[in-house]
Amino acid sequence: MNIPFVDLSVQHLPIMDDMRAAMEAVIKKGDFILGKDVSDFENAFAKYCGVDFAIGVDSGTSALEIVLRAMNVGPGDEVITVANTFIATASAISFTGARPVLVDIDPETYTISIDGIAEAISPKTKAVIPVHLYGHPADMDPILDLAKANRLPVIEDACQAHGATYKGRQVGSLGDAGCFSFYPAKNLGAFGDGGMVTTGNLEIADRIRMLRNYGQREKYDHRLIGYNCRLDTLQAAVLKAKLPCLNKWNEERRRNADIYNEMLSGTELALPLEAEYAHHVYHLYVVRAKDRDALQSYLADRGIGTGIHYPIPIHRQKAYTQLGYVQNSVPYVEAYADQILSLPMFPGMRRDQVEYTARTIKAFYG
Ligand SMILES: *Cc1c(COP(=O)(O)O)cnc(C)c1O
Image (cartoon, rainbow, N blue to C red; front, side, top):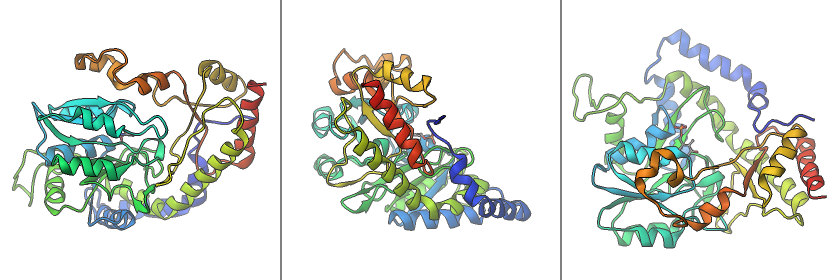
């Protein structure tokens, strides 16, 4: 059997007609930039997340950068985030001129350590960006308490967690703003790049609307030095057609995670946890294995695709040597980087594919 790490075609084939119709309608209208589908999708996504405002942008990276800009984060400032995340969380901070301050993870949930944040807060800190990594929400209440006590805004990096909830509330509605990516393989993906900012703050929403569109309020009235980082109307039309499927797709991910959990319990692997406060949406199903590289090639030889998220933590990337982290400053991130392995996980993945993957892992451990 051949099992890809991710197969997007199985989610798209059943809704091909809807998506074709949505794209054709945009083409017929010729309404390609900030067309009605963008505002329709923004309204639908805001409602889904339970926030007042959602502003479409061209990627998750732009969403993060533009929120920081809207909050006036810049040179000389520090922004606290976590060392095990996708590089874009850190690069968005760097784009503003601020310094990313990278802290360790909680060893159980792989999300940002609360003690790590407390230790990292300095007079230069201007914001905190917890990441809902792999689809598991960070423990937001203590983060929000700590941030409030220090008058810091909290920006959720929800790029891997569309539809995840924390104590019953949607991610993206918990902090001062939430940032989503619609990269095709995310839980909700476009046919290319896209992103979204969610917020309940009118002033931030207003600044972001300007910043994404040349800084203008009305045409040729430029209040801010802005970007061109709008969500394409065609992408919004596709995303609007896909949004009604998101909960079903997340449930399919959760069902597959249950099968993995059941079949792999009792092996040497450390399996992912779902904290009591969390509704995990398994953007990734990540296990830890002491002999990770051998397991990964054993699976590859048997047709099973896997991934590593992420093999090199941010403080060890060449681009970030200037941060000057000393060895073992984020011990869990460093220890886990050599052990984590992401198993095949995508909506539409069949039970027999999950079972074959789990059986092959068991065979590896004899
Ligand atoms: C995907 C991702 C991003 C960046 O999103 P893009 O749309 O690829 O720019 C940021 N943070 C995390 C955690 C991500 O997974």
